[in-house]
Image (cartoon, rainbow, N blue to C red; front, side, top):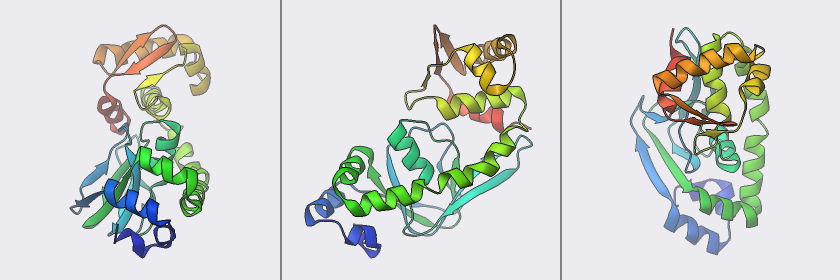
Length: 218
């Protein structure tokens, strides 16, 4: 907590909230090039960089990396906050650029702070307000994916943290700009690979890493 108090939102917390953060904070030091978060991962809290820098990136169909944004000291991961508040799986990859120290505030505690602490509300809203602009370039790249990759990307982006997606094949076809028959064939291949399980009106993601691997496949 002492390191976080170097940044204004945490200096301005009430004494009671500071004590809660001290008791609940999880601190982690990441080696250079270490993978911190992966696409399809469940998010358990809010991540703040204390020292070093994190790079958030996506993978293009040809396997090349595309940097979405950097997280510098005092900043938080907007994708992680979005995943936390909307119960979604993480939509990208995060890697430490150098040796980086990350402070993670567990989800229930961060939600509690958000409800009663204006500094936390402010830092959260400001962080989330930038996500639309940073996603525009990424959305353009998604249209270059093959159908199998676009379907895998749709599943990872819209599944809940428990890996469940309530969407029919017709709805997915409309979203992807294709037919239900084409989606049905592609889903059958994903089921055969063990990546997903289909049930009436919903889909369960069984292997998020496998789906992420399809997206990254050249």
